[in-house]
Length: 138
Image 1 (cartoon, rainbow, N blue to C red):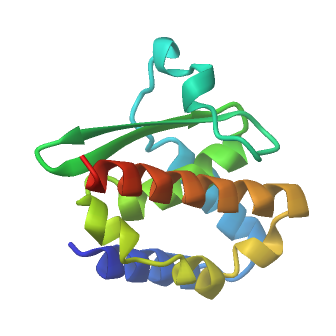
Image 2: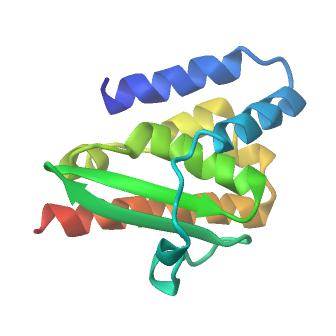
């Protein structure tokens, strides 16, 4: 599945719900899908700066693709990072660098977040792109 297909799936899933209460419930459900992140990876180095809640993102290159692990103390934030990982996890660095975050606008997520959470979403995306850039150089 391509990044574009993963983004389309998320858009389609969000269109299924009638209101933002249901969409927030879905985001909470997505938070439960995150792969377990051990406490030793929840370090200062993996902490994303600019998020209202603590969010950790760890990345490693496995067979030419970036594998992300993430966690957060806040359930909504954990769901938001889960959405991003559904799109960007296990991808080649160049795939991530060539992609955008337009699907977030299409589902209306950014406009339904508090300004602090919206800034946090941008920080998460920038960190994913940063890892992709770093791994593309190695």
